[in-house]
Length: 177
Ligand SMILES: Cc1cc2nc3c(=O)[nH]c(=O)nc-3n(C[C@H](O)[C@H](O)[C@H](O)COP(=O)(O)O)c2cc1C
Image 1: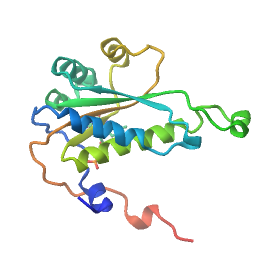
Image 2 (image 1 turned 180 degrees about the horizontal axis):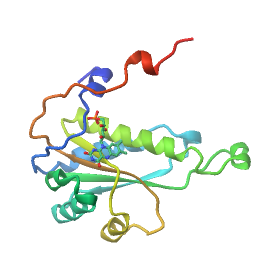
Image 3 (image 1 turned 120 degrees about the horizontal axis):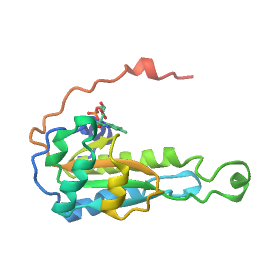
């Protein structure tokens, strides 16, 4: 796919993964898209845990099924967990801002890059907001004090049809001056 806007239009949250595993090479490319993301002062406040081993994938899926929702994760083929790391800001900024001041935005951008790269590779994705953080730390050997930025399920969709996007109108969210 050549057109970036078309890619943005095709990316959608998948809730009907078909259980097929995701190729290792595609996961490398998704993580590489995250690694290449822009960040404040090039602080790169991220690391990526890529879950591909089927036994661990099954356990990680359970961690995303809080409060009885997200049963569809049982059929996801892989996960990428985005962790927040320390950002090194330039000295002038360090004097007035907390090192993590820009990190949330940087990490959101990295998560978006991962999902868009997944889409470009023919994969489906879904960000998940609620998960058992403690269990994930135990399963993936992540230090318990680590901040999580994103939990992204990846796989192949049973139905690849693109749904109409439900969004505020262009005029509602934009203003040219
Ligand atoms: C941080 C975050 C958490 C989300 N959590 C869930 C979730 O737990 N379950 C789910 O089905 N979708 C979840 N979504 C997907 C959103 O519902 C979805 O992005 C939004 O409705 C727009 O639809 P689209 O992604 O198909 O364009 C989450 C998305 C984000 C960015």
